[in-house]
Length: 479
Image 1 (cartoon, rainbow, N blue to C red):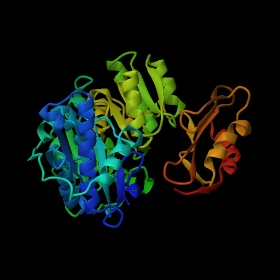
Image 2 (image 1 turned 30 degrees about the horizontal axis):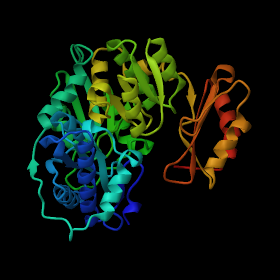
Image 3 (image 1 turned 60 degrees about the vertical axis):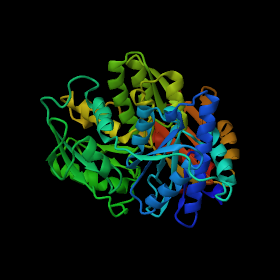
């Protein structure tokens, strides 16, 4: 049964049919044993390297799953610092702030409220996925038996870290110099009745609608802040356009400067400009990268390989080093560390910051955008317009029972003699210099689907490209 809830990057399932209380306890045992092994292999035996931070989101199943998880952890000799209701980026902060062995967030991110799960991180908040420890945790968990494990030997402590966390996040507003000074910003934030509803009052001072925030010159209009029921105002996935509608409408109605919509555990956010239009995450990556390069000239910038060509072009033009990264936070964070990148961005709404331990954070993404706007006279729509200069397909999905075989044949079917082809993640065929287009086709990690992303210099070329490539991939499905 455990194998059904262990995924590539986390543990997740519907509660209580797939994910059970006993499994939460087993995950606690497996995680405790694995993190102790990591500490031992590194020669670390301090009290904090035998300590794990734990937090949860607002789902109804959260309290009991957290209780069982903690009981499993302390039975391995690990001590636990329970942070209570927090956003996922708080876990990454706490691990580094306290110097802990790792952390566990009890959440199912953007999944419906009947789902729950665990995101696990190791020392320095390094992500733990299938290839970096999750497989070992599953093995330890599968062997965990309460009849053969002694009474708890670790201790549990409740701790509130909101004050140092808020200071850490607010630093990113002011990181590029004086911000929100001389220019008042009206900001819409949709918390989706999820964890941003807990985070925002602590970090940005949001206490209700149209109130003055904790940052000078910041006026917040907050939507869907109540997360006491454990039910969402709308599905907490800001990548789905329908879920962004409330944010867009509020920006237009209140003539706001910018809008933000957070996912369930607030590690991702999507941005709406002053005209009520959704800003593409790759376009926002380019904009924030230029801002970051102004402070750290010549630095590397990591970007999701599905991103617009404009990201690479603008980073290079600004004197930075563009680094294409594989899709997924495990790969993005590894690339950030390998290239000592100052910033990274992914199409899924994850944004990574060197000064945040290379980790992603929705709150810091919001703070960084606010700081940028506070230093600019132009509106966000004007800043993004020159970056959004090419035409994109968005991610298109096709059903296919043998996706690997299709990818292997694509090069001979599509690529010309002058095409640049690579297999960093699926297959990328780049004919941008010669014919003004490129595509990436990759397999879904969870379904028999092929995902197509395409970009061209004009709409006519893009339409011809999708009409040509799409039938080779299978049957188009809305996803």
